[in-house]
Length: 292
Ligand code: BQF
Image (cartoon, rainbow, N blue to C red):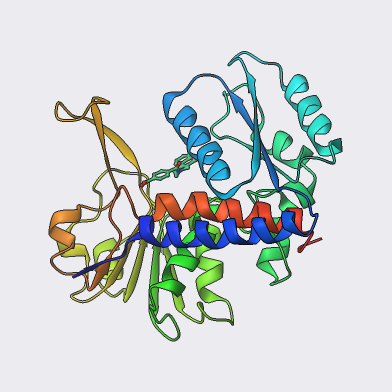
């Protein structure tokens, strides 16, 4: 088994981005600027927004975080989005999910200008991605495609099984793997919570992409010898051994599945860092007005 080192690949890409930023600003161009809206005080969301701000700093982007209490009115968030939409200094805007249950996610997402929607969640970007037009692609699937490309994994003609059908990961992932372009050109099967004979299907996968949202759901008996396994899950479990009091595990039981897989992503240090770097790539595109 060979580890797919997302942490290292993300570092390489950040260096490439930093070089590009130097070139742009050296030529009198604008410093790319990412804004994030963060609602409430969920510790995981705090970490994710901090990770994004830190990554911006590393590559020389500006970043801003707009914070709101958990009981913020939806109208106030929509006004904040409008305000950021109109700010010519800000190239990309993300709204950190999940939002509190009294807020309509779609309403907020659809308020973002598609040309600043660097998370690629606006229906205009989703639609454009679906029909193969230039678009911002959701950061996790985008990061996985980049990971596959830079690890030299062949996808053409191979059977890719995607476990999970969310709008943010599973759905776009299946479309990207099936597209007539490489990486892509795979034969794609999408599985979900109602799938029957799940084990038979996952065992037929040359490439297994797991985004089911359940800790250590995939076990060795569900994986074919020599398969490539991509683990999108991130779960915090209590640990006495770490300073934070928790450790991270994925949707895959790593130790046993690693025995069978030819290549596998670890958690942490696999897909997560690639998600962050994809957001940077999308923000760079926004500042260069490459999509719209
Ligand atoms: C790593 C996310 C679920 C729901 C909303 C690096 C991240 C995570 C792990 C990170 C995620 C997960 C993010 C690692 C952003 C990925 O070293 O393994 C980075 O910051 N992520 C998010 O913004 O929202 C989520 C997962």
